[in-house]
Image (cartoon, rainbow, N blue to C red):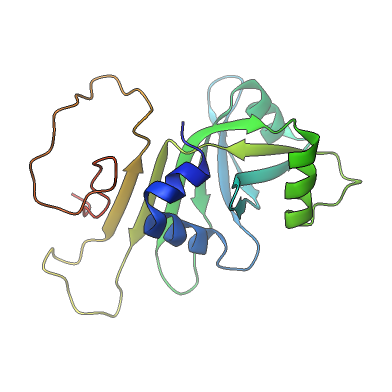
Length: 184
């Protein structure tokens, strides 16, 4: 799993687009999906914090925190915008941050209240997706479908995925993933 910083270094424009959607109302705001003990999904509103050092979330003692402590898999979706139907999605693993200096630094950046029983988690990025819908603009040649950019962590093992090079002439990220493909 890649850190937010590694993802942002690999695809800065995609990372900026996702950051803007997560922070469209000022502080970060989105929906966090976690995995319950029985394997089912659970969704919670959260305030993710994107810094140069990573993607973080302060989580109070709650079912979502227990989910992350037990099984760190997560999905994070941006809160719907009032001005467009654009959306951002991230998935990966959440790990508790245990270094007191790093916790203090992120707490200062995020203005986290010290008296609250929260734990800091850092979210790695396995999948990042940004969907843009151009309402009000001219119809695109693709029939008006949304433009979808996807980044997959090149270091994550994917069963069934081969390492055959793609010969299509298109704009590719540093690791060869097409970040400008449209939805099929």
